[in-house]
Length: 361
Image (cartoon, rainbow, N blue to C red; front, side, top):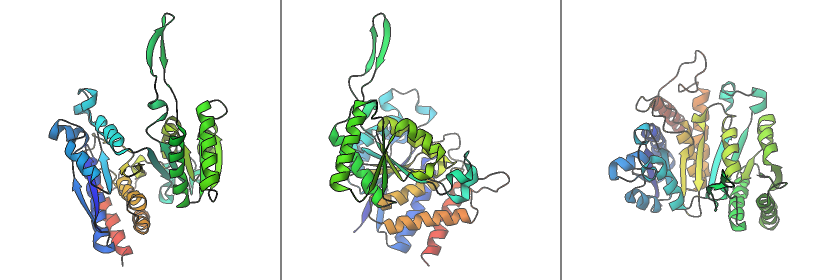
């Protein structure tokens, strides 16, 4: 069966890093019988320039007709003066909403070859491999009522944090399913000692665990303690599941354990659709210079293989190829330390492809 991928290169370094990911996918087609085909479309600033819309109708139709979406990056200073609905970031929000992408997967894996790139001691982060599963479309960012009013003669700002039990159940289910593919351990993070919504969160997670996922180890942690433990002893975590606000903060904290944002992929997953993208931005300052690190995008392809295309075997192959390229000393400029030599974006993509071909024998 042919697998159809919607490829949205986007803006800035997006086209460069996506090109390297597509080279990897072509190797998978040629040597591992992946059977994927892809079609490109515009989003963000590129979508606006082509059609006056950061999420063009043609892109929407392509995304709905595909098995998965691969995104590069959106944004750039040339579009900052546009009205908010026309800015590149609006395209990203629209596609997430349109595809119902309620679960954000943010892995933070420390590669042993890059231990010295982190600001934390190597003995603290060696072996860290965490997946943060963040609820993406509800919670305080979307709750109503919200606003700024004048009350008793002074300005008053307010937001509402709320979750339906069905929203909690579906994100917890994603976390438990992901844990079954990893070390089988979920830590649910909330603030149940203070917040009513967190008390409901904990109760629903416990109920689901008892009914459907008793084979997975479950623990609970308050968010303030979780923030401390991520720095104190990050190896204690496997899968962290949490709400939108807490997940936004904790996933960024966890990402910095690795030392380089250029190594970190992500996935946004819904009931039927999923989108994969690096967590870094469009980096307009180096766009078109062949300097970007494509590994986060290549590792996003690995996540796509694992979670959308049912090819965990090939996901393992891609991840091994990245490790072998790093073992060989290949470094883009963001990874090179001290006097280490650096290579271009395309050269890093070539190095991963060469390692993949070697794995194919």
